[in-house]
Image (cartoon, rainbow, N blue to C red; front, side):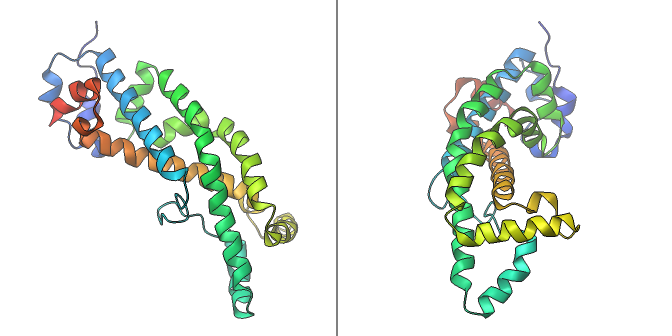
Length: 229
């Protein structure tokens, strides 16, 4: 059984400040270390879905609140100046509500990604820096999640007339090189931002768990991370 293979990465990664060389002198195998990472990621993912997949999960959280696409921002100022601010607010609310409605669909895919995580995947998460969790989940789940999110986002935003008008104008503007491809369609834009926000919050929740594994109530987390205090 391989032991203490994670030492170097753990010492140098900024996001894992709670870890120390002394802790990894304990009798921890690669399997234990990988199990601890899996447990932390699964709890982080489930927690993030719970935080975001509810009313105001996106709209009320400045870290993930979805703003208007850049191309629409200038037009929104004009609309507000002409007394049409309500239409702008309607679209912003619809965009964020769409993300909140879509996020719960992510839970099964995220959990499956964690359960299929290899020891090498765990090593990459530990040694990959502050965005390693985002990279792991994005690599494993972004495309299938986008497929699940898009129909939900479309249903939630198609009722807002400004969304359809934006898509018509932005689509033409993209053809002229004035709009980025990812901002040329409200539904695609919201889907992308919803995934960005989800992965960001998973990373934040996972870091909290590593910093306070006892609060997570998991034996493997306490064994792997609790001894690192």
